[in-house]
Image (cartoon, rainbow, N blue to C red):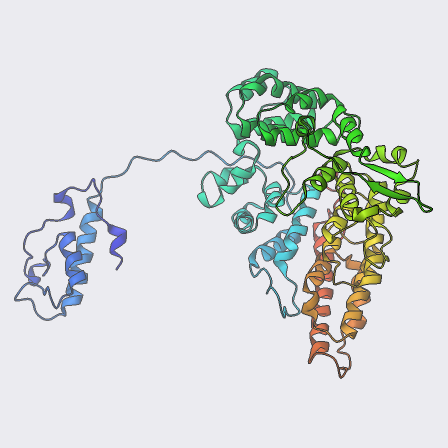
Length: 575
């Protein structure tokens, strides 16, 4: 029996827990062992060989007698417990006004949450779809339709979000207000309170000036951050006015978080406040203010950075062919530091090149055509750069194009996807190419990546595919499937492309499943092929096709019967 479930209660008195006197003879209904709980536990620990029952007891084995004595003592102890004070009943769960899931979609959700395998990682993965990897897409579609989570699925949904941080935003949006209610009752789900604005505290109506002022003056830090974000998303000016009123009394770490909230709805009206923040005591606050101002091409800081940067870069007209020449800054003066230039470079980086990169990155891209004889971004990027400064200058332009969201410069720096260097004259890494692609429209982005894959294959395409809209456009989907087919014909193993294959399962348009039928057969094995590779590829394509068909079924199950989303929004296709 489990003695731990009947541990002594501090409120149990001696006369109710059973005395500690000598045991009565067995025939009289008493116990052959001392009946105090402590003595029984001691006997169990020592063993009945070392602490036998009272003399004269016979007919039954000592361990059985000990268990009988413990059972009787347990009954006495439980009968003697005093009732505890009644706990406060929890509040009712809030209502969720959203429409219920269609029955088939609710069953599908249960299946997705029950699958906790998370895939087999690298190597062979079998031919069955990885259900847990489809859950994020399912949640996105359900949220777009505006459905409410079935109450019985909430615990499993919160458990899944607890284990995977990437699921949390979509899972908590789908879980709705009841997620916070449950999180207050179960410590395992406290992450839901941390993820909610203001730690799950209800924010006042942003139009209630008195309540807003009270929360801003008296609220906890998380509540104030959430309030500032909510105001900023709706009416940027009042949020800035709140911040201005208490800025001087805020802690440095708090000022940094508050300042970061101004990214939402950033406009020229924020410039006076940000200019003041350039003189802040905190270096991090100054750097953030400078970054925000540099994202406003018409700001005074952007003008100062443009003057500094363009003074370092010019066209050399003395040679037959024009080229860009670079003269790096000779010092980082106090004005540069105030405008966000970090004076000390990282280890292994030269000071002057470090300063140059920061100036060019912060300068408005619109300043360069006038400086470089009216050339377009494509023409500027095509110019040679003297003395080995091309990589440094183009990398800074890449960062500026990403910061300013400039599609024309991004296009110029990316170059043609079929370029021998696989990224054009300006992109210096796959990560930067992916960031530049994010500034392009979805269709153009997909077309560029499709051209890249057609020329260079899949070995470097994973990061680029990750920034493409889902489901992939038809040209991109065809390029991926064709490249996988080429890799199969080359005789390599499919798990060399497991990352791309996993993306294809989640991102290919389900309509592409029909094109995979011809890839399911096991091809004749070439002499130079890896042993058994053909069979593994057929298995991988079978999983891909099964996953696409499953996604199509999921989209059908989530579709409202009348064809209109309950929320009035369009759902993402290809769920």
